[in-house]
Image (cartoon, rainbow, N blue to C red; front, side, top):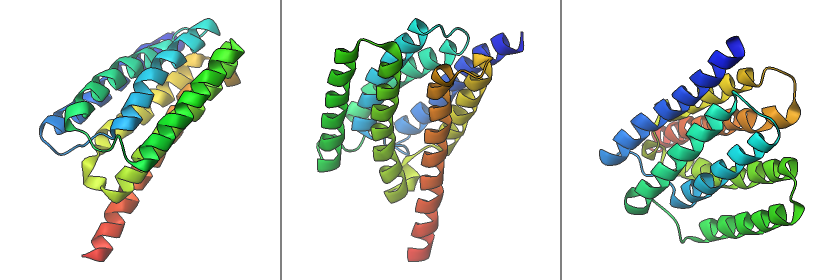
Length: 193
């Protein structure tokens, strides 16, 4: 019962994490990093289906909600975001394409999942850099909620299964990294002033 509830809650919290982000996009406060959200939109779907193929159940709610939200944010980032054709974005997108090709060659869901996490981390690094350089262009509450959703999805796995825990644990780590970059970015900005 707790596992099932954690699974449902993880999906709900992840969906809720997009609400303040989208609101701040329309208020011109948040500027999503285009390449990050493109990578996340594609990979969120792959992660969902890889976890499904490996037997995930209630923890799938987080991965499914993440994929839907990422696609929505990417579509908004096209008009309201930052980046996309700068050198680091092109390198990240190229690396993502190579990793997707490697995944295609393996035809193994577990390998695909870890390649997805690696590529996803490439997108996270782009957002971490942007969050540090321009901390006011990120919505803190969204990343806190994303962390909580990932944590609940870890609980929803219901067992110590490295493959099933990998993606939600990674979501927690990536969210914390972005939050740390935002905090350090604000701290650095306050020293400059």
